[in-house]
Image 1 (cartoon, rainbow, N blue to C red):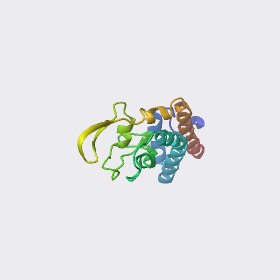
Image 2 (tube, rainbow, N blue to C red):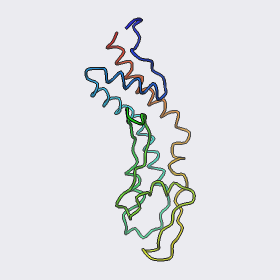
Image 3 (cartoon, rainbow, N blue to C red):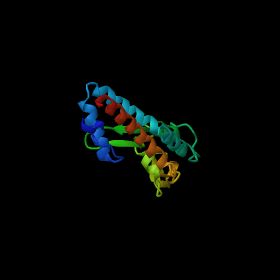
Image 4 (cartoon, helix red, strand yellow):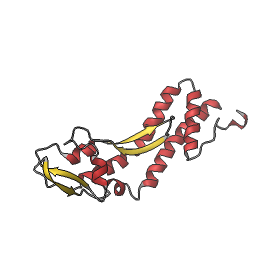
Length: 168
């Protein structure tokens, strides 16, 4: 490479991530490098996932406690997600659906919403409106997003330097 620079331009955008993924694919051990990049990005987001989990666990509970615990079921489904290539590339914290928990697959989404959700009382009429802890997911990482964004960018830059050192 002329000038000894990396074989691609890295910027803190989706285009920069796409360029990094293309450069990794060009390497002989690209599959392993891709796994390492994804792991580094997930590790950078783990503290944010912990904050989101503590956000749902702080939601009040007044139920009898016989059914599966809703808050802990939601907390188990919160994890960092990294995709490299395809329709969407990037890193995020995601609260996955809670299947098989009281028939309430959309629990993370519904408990986060200000207007709450409706359900039957003990499986029969009347329908009741229930409210969770409003915006528990959104407010959990508020103020720290720059820290996590920077950590993900550092993981990307470390991989870019590693690939650039091979080329030069």
